Image 1 (tube, helix red, strand yellow):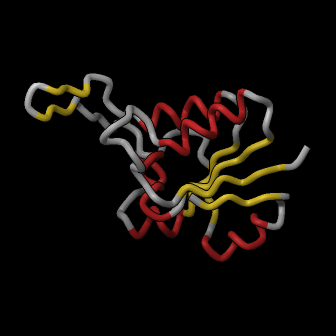
Image 2: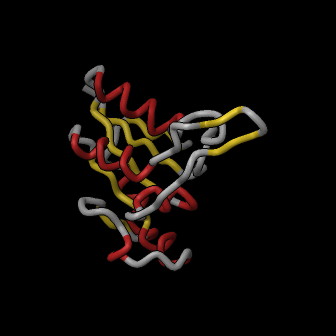
Length: 127
């Protein structure tokens, strides 16, 4: 089976309309269908791994979004399914995110090591 790395860089894609990030959701669905996947969080998406985030519901007039986004929990659930999730530690540091701010189980990758990581996969999808 081909191994696929999902690089998530565009953070908070569609989260105003939905209760999840479309690519994180897609990764859950594909893993559930048997795909061999790993995830690399980079750029602003490194924020997905920050623990203790709380997002309240959102309202526009009478329209309420009552199922708020919980991307950190979505990442935790991905790892529970056996998906390796890494993050570019240089990107986290640039945003003031310490390793102690991150959920357990995320694997740090230095930016200089990303090309080597890419070589470990048959396919790389960059979102």
